[in-house]
Image (cartoon, rainbow, N blue to C red; front, top):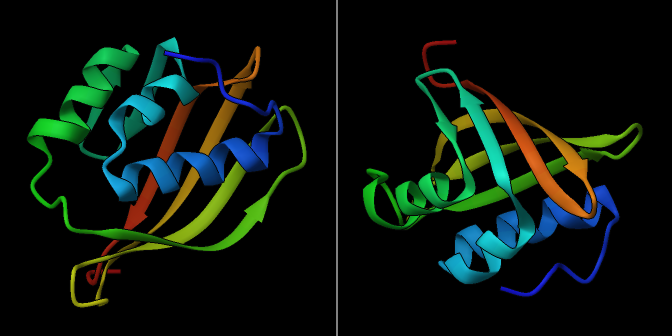
Length: 118
């Protein structure tokens, strides 16, 4: 796994969604620190390998796209507001992701999601 080509938090976040949407799990792993942690409403993933394994093999919907509506790059990390779209382009849920960056890699991610129920 090679290190990402940029340490810019906004570019790292965009590369994260690009890799995830393309199913490029090697590239996704390269963007993440080995100790990467994601906290989301339904669970927590600890470690890059566990997170990538879930995204590759276990998530219920893989034919999705992340529509990034805004990137807020100020601070030691970056926040992203967007929507997860299904294969037909319909919104599954809206989200805000807050990434922390350390040594040019994404070190943690807090995901806040809202579905049709408000």
